[in-house]
Image 1 (cartoon, rainbow, N blue to C red):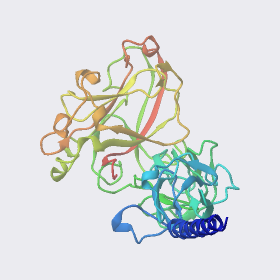
Image 2: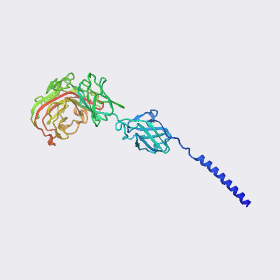
Image 3: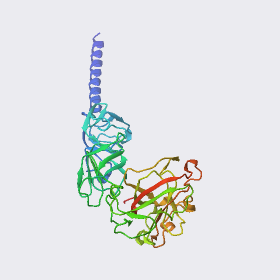
Image 4: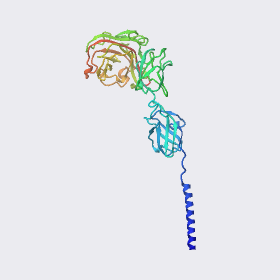
Length: 417
């Protein structure tokens, strides 16, 4: 019995020793629990901008969330909107992630929390961060040469949180209206306009300028303003009438006639054509190598009487090989009674000029529609012929009264304008 007891005691001691050793090994091998996750900053993934931190960005931006103990990510939220992520791009100190394009901004919800929230398997961290609405885009100004006191429309996108609109000469106004889809602004040109420049839209987060200059009456690209740039040669009346044609800037061409019968092609009669002086410099020789697709013909037009038939054929050289058929009354193939409430800017990309009497192949280079040195002969001729022979809606009908003002004819670079 004594032997057995001694043996048992030795066995128990060995087991205890092994247990203690095992616990020591387990404790020494056990991974140290991480501390709570912490976000310290947000930066761009570009290594050249690694030291550039920021506290706001547009949805759709690729960012790096930096901090400590960020491993074991389960969820990432931007203003409580969950973002997808790839675990390959997550470490204890960095999470590379796209801000979802659908993440809400204060435009959608004024009460968004303005924060990034990272949830891990050992806690969560938040960081104050503003998702900014996208910057506005300016596509078109209804009248690029409107005088002070004139109402204009600015068409574009994302006209949110606008604080003010600044016209050339630092003329500011906060008196404007924006439509429900945030795609159009109605604003009155402030008093005192005299400078040429860009219109700036200032929002809570962005400032953008119009790609086209405003009040551009005597700048490069203007071919004729019927006042002091180049000379009108023949065709229609040149008048100055700011009463009937409110907002007119000095002299302008006036296409005017009455009872123009269907099929009447005699555009050279009855004040129905505006032909400018022959062979003017349209594009300077040094710009003949520019991208043709970036240029457009522009002018202001005021349609005083109902226009619902015929066309203004626009040509750039004497033989009329290339033409643009302008018939704005034909909207989506349907005849309408077209008039304008004041002057509007017409924009015609040069690529819209076509051969074959204006219905053939589009022009692809300046040399198609101009002489090799960039000179040309611009004419705008009204004829009451059918602009689209394949469309019954476009068939010519009697036009009782023709009264159209044209001003500020120019060819400009619309990419940088």
